[in-house]
Length: 357
Image 1 (cartoon, one colour):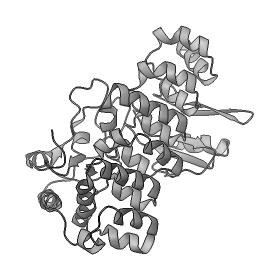
Image 2: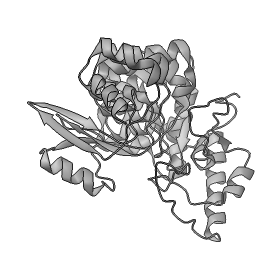
Image 3: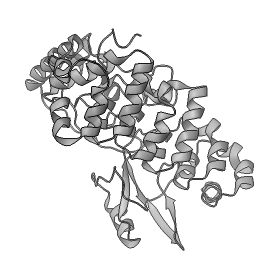
Image 4: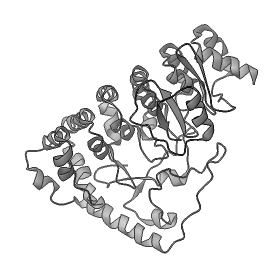
């Protein structure tokens, strides 16, 4: 409506007083229409379907407005995947099924760099994708003080915020290292591809974040958790030690600092937790062979079912639920987050000894 466009215009133009005045009647309102970019001088303005005011504040890097909106829209998620034009190269520049409308807009405005933002991303994730580092720091402080549930959210690639951070640049790692105490609590989440924050940090050469995680593990006497996650990569026929020996000496050095044992001793055998995961995954894979492949869901803004963009594991969900060791992720108390069962089944915790309910 015209009223809502006045609201979003005030956000984009950083009109603080007008935003304060219009806030009560516009909390939670999401934008409509088509994805559109416009340019005045060197400033790009956005119109992105289903974005709320706080999402735009992140894109425009407006700290004052962002702080005004935090108590009201902090838990609003990204409902559909989208793409953000950027001034510099992004670690998330994936042309994953980009809509022709967005392609045309990028062409018209000579957009060379962009971030792919998966659906179900939180505002923390969006700050990372948009390179809004100061806002990321502020949001982390806010959620640490108010509500830790956001740290358990995961996007449709089955990645938590810490896993997204693992793939980001050094500036994000610097911010994350200041908040590792709360971020570390969700280190144990692993998706169906075997991706966790340790693995992704190593694969992306993110030695700064990896060191922050290892330092936090040492401070909390949780070195065994990190070692279990490393060993569990053998379930997916990956040996982090051998991979890093060839590709990344910095990350290798960080992992070696975990213990006085030799690296070969650390990586020789998967942990008991890893063997449990391996057996469960094998059972899932075998059972899925006799099942028909589920139809791919049509992804629309009104559809609560969200198909994973990664197609992580195609399995029978009833059999998945019957495996007690594959602990499911849950957000039962949240009224804002998705409660989609398929998304909940995308992550599991390694074992009870690591994660206590």
